[in-house]
Length: 430
Image (tube, rainbow, N blue to C red; front, side, top):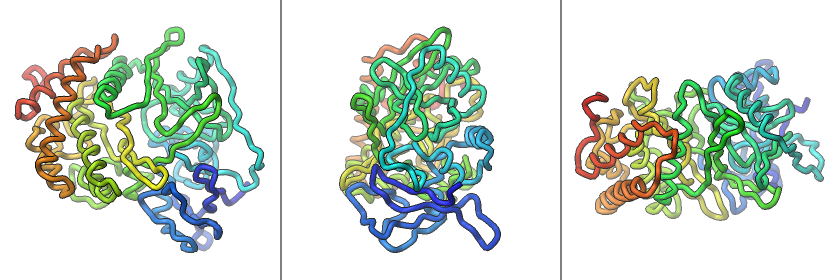
């Protein structure tokens, strides 16, 4: 078994990843990354967390948090590692087993992979789709098969498949998926419909472009989501490079809580907040436009009551000679589902985590503290986003299966912000 992996960005060879050894003791949570001597930075940036300086080995902790940020979270990582007989904290082993197809355009390949390698897919019928979805729910393993080298962050059960025309296909080895399938859960029967409703609102507002649809196979219902980091031409899948804000900040890849703003210690330097994300957008060439986009997304998360809008659900897309904020993704109105334990958001607004205390004025103060946008621009973006949200609500028909409480509460949230009040909560829901 090789002690090195070849790292490619698209089809450009960057260098190799190896385990970290301290004498006889191996630090399984860390890897080393060595640039190829012939590599020179191209038009597509690798990451916001460390720079590519030819001839200089980047910091192992930053490299490990960046690469590890593509791995699944929590019980998903544990289940997938157990299926391959590896330690869930062993980063090199995770990359070896599942680094063939991850988020974005990086791939981790065997050094001796044939140059004429071609992706392999198997078409599957509805019965197999049902089996894989059931497996994803019961085993928390992304529905992977023994030869799969795919992984994706997150905690919600999901299945990675490719769709070419009307047919679903299962990727083998490091062949790439094109869709994320989220099954309906008995414990939260409305969740996929609530998420789809938020997709429709975001698309109507121009905050997202990826497609999604509600489907059924037999008695199994699921939400099929196009991956925004993939494009499809026939049966050829092309990759779009992206990283999330947790990776860009170099947050601890092993700690599932590291992606959340810390309510017990709001100034914790090892955790994210809205301002730190604005510091990244403010450092990009189109600083004002990207920071305005981040503000629109933040307002949207508030409007839908998304308490899971953490740093891994904010993305950055690396394109030719440019980096931009990704479209809005994985935005779900979680505050209004059974099992909610608090009103806290993933990141505070103007120092307050309680969603009920948010107002348009407090969002203005939050965005003003970023010191990137002019005060008039801040107010204009916020008011325009709330107005656009209300217009989208009037245009979009909620899907059958959505929780009626969600529709009512989203109407309430938008009206309260538009009227200049704190969101608060209807008396029956306090």
